[in-house]
Length: 195
Image (tube, rainbow, N blue to C red; front, top):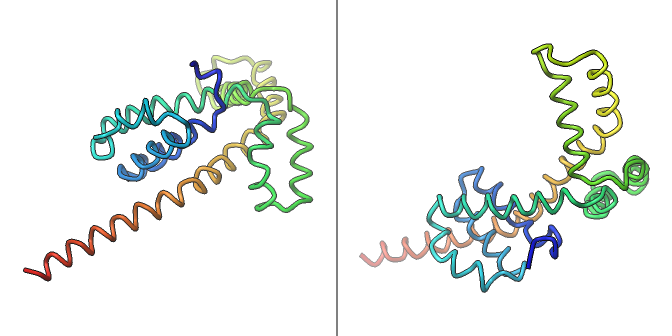
């Protein structure tokens, strides 16, 4: 079965794992992949492969890179309405109902475009604006400014709220890792007390 048959949420814990790995928390990154395998219905394929990955940083990095790439690719194919719906509970929590409705109006202006297209347009426009090489004409710079005006706010909000979304997914895994580490500490302490 190809990735086209799946929703991005199947791979969202790879993004969580990437964040843990960025923070040098290999154990939690491995637990994130395990959660992805189970909740994403990939346990038969992924869990046997992962037997040693929770302690081998290179294997964790490879798995995270692959599955996070799949997550980003699938997310990029979704339209802006999907992105609003995905983050709507967080928008409401952080912004309140009235502000969320104002934000929805901004999202609705570009609702049929895919997140990937918005991301590409934004990044190319930023490249033109920030370029110091002089390789871009004034017309290209003016067009880039228009693109940033059209997409910048929504793109920035998606990036910001995606981070909050990922952090929410990280919390239970962090708790589990911290508890596991503490239990290991207690076992070692008890063993030392017996000596």
